[in-house]
Length: 208
Image (cartoon, rainbow, N blue to C red; front, top):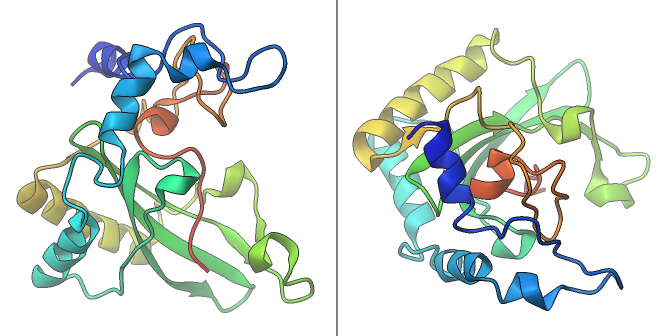
C-alpha cells in the first residue's frame, strides 16, 4: 500500500470533519453512529477480526523460530488499541533507573506491523504516581535506539520472522507518525491524529 491507499483506508474507519465530542463535551451520536465508526467497531471487537489467541500465535511462532527473549501479550482493547501488542520487558540500564520495553504491534485493520521502544524512568520515591513510572519526553517513546546493537539485533530477527511466517509487512517509518487530516477519535484531536493512532494505538504504554 502507498500513502494514498493508507489514507483511503483510514477514512473508512474514522468519519471526516466530525468531532467525537459535541459542543456540550458529550459523546457525539453522529460520530458514534457513523458508517465509519460502525466499520471500526466491527473489526476491533474482542477478536480483532482474528482468533482471540492471535497474540499467543505470534509469540509461539517467534519462539519456534529461535527468538530467545521473553514475550507477553499486552493487548488491551479498553485502552483504544487497534492492534495486538506483544511486549518484551527485559532491557534495563544499570547506570540509571531506566526501563525499555520493546513493543511489536499488529494492526487489526490492515496486514501491517510496527515496532518501537517505550522509554520509562522508574520512580521508587513515589510509586503511586503513574503506576510507578514517569514518562520521558516524546510521549514515552525511546527515539535514539537505532545505534544500539542489543535492540537492532532483536528487531531485525523478529521482523524477518513476522514477514516470512505471519505475512505482515512493516508499516513505513516515514508515514507512521504523519498526521491525517480531518479525523479524530475519543482521545486524539483531529490536528494530532496520525497513522499510528488510526491503525495501531492511541498511546504508548506497557505492562508493569
